[in-house]
Length: 349
Image (cartoon, rainbow, N blue to C red; front, side, top):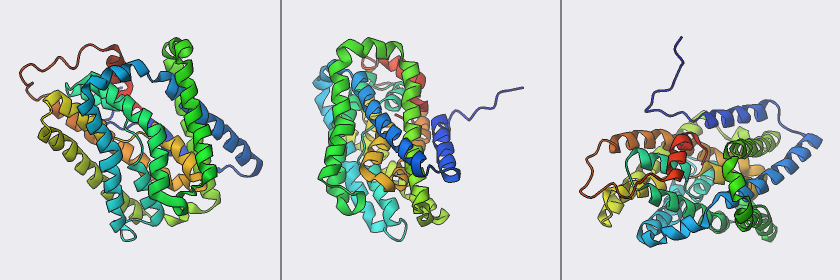
């Protein structure tokens, strides 16, 4: 019997299916009372551990080496933290006709999170783009996002949407920034261990995010938040996100061409500049939104799967493009890139 597989042009992320299963579990069996307190404490610890691992994995040396291609990285950062948020703010005009206030808040938060690392590298490699640049661009985005995403959320969402206060800022620093910095500091001693056990730690990584999702959606169920969402509203959200992704894919490709980047660099800019990281966004949303996190992360979960499916098609088409004269030097047999290609399109990164 043949094994059932998804068409190669439609990569259904298995991790998204697990996330949806976790949402279903939270809907049927939400944590209540003492169980909710225990799960919330475990979720807090899991978030801190996640960002500790992010810090331990991120190679500061590789990121600094990539500074020589600063124009490309500035372009990606501008797309991620300037253009995306501006489009998110423009989407406010769709409220309340297409989006409820809660869904719009989640959509705006989606536009504020960092870019992906693994899937950007994977698609850049498939499309024969500048893989080392994609590695550095994703790393820069994650590093900057640790600080910039909470600041942008506090500024653009305001205290009325996310419950931001001085206590929230302290919580963000303690749960996100301190563990991340600790991971960076200790990377010198534990970096080898993290690399050798990346598969096991990857499972812990993903399991932690599933726990965060379960706690967030459980609290949403207990508080009756999901009564605010209808199938029509979800359809409207999907339509808005499809337009958002199409606009960003066009801007990153043609904008990079207008800035006179070569083909390989344009590919890296398109895939790194048009994506949003599920792995970074989910834990951040849990800290920033508290009880409202279940609706806040929904647009990000949907956008993540949409970007994988669309970018897989684009990467395959780009792989058949004729190379420009002198192209090919940027890709190279980079070990990190090869590793990312093996897992990138199936990751929550």
